[in-house]
Image (tube, rainbow, N blue to C red; front, side, top):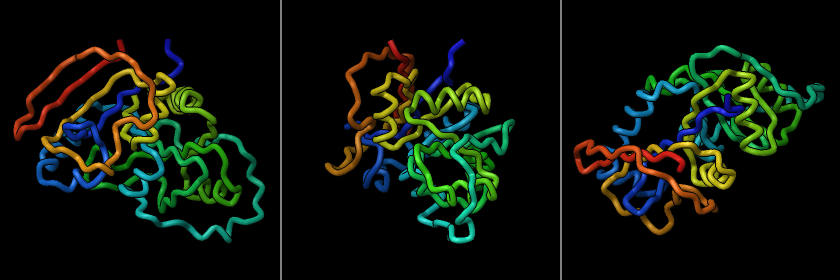
Length: 228
């Protein structure tokens, strides 16, 4: 049995392989986004994972708590499991503890994300931030590498299938460490701008084999690859 979850990198991409940036605001990408969210729901995964910037843009919107009330509490740098048997988890790779969550679960109009219990993946964090997470009921783990994080996610929370949903830096870190088992790519009929981000930043050359290609209509193509 694998010591890590099955990792499926699920992303909307432009024709030239970009995943974030201005191209997503183009009307040509809107139909692709609808397909992306539908497939996210159809996977019935145990968790989805994003980097700090993606989580901030999609969910926390820059809010951060006043940590003064938590100063002076001795917490210690040990993993904290607030909810072990959630039906779905939102895994935030937030190395230094910069995300501000108002509750322990995500609330979103899309049922594919709504009510996901939040797990913060940290490398280093102030004890006041850890106290805030505990009081808010948010789980957190410490990990120095993506593999260590994946191993803990499976062992502590029973996560067997994880959707890796960016951004570019997090995808690249997973790819560089050979941790992505499949790619699930919804291709928008748009060429992105030069400043938009690539699928996997600073990654390594690796071969994948085609699983399927599907025409989703509106010039949107859905492509799946698995590690060769």
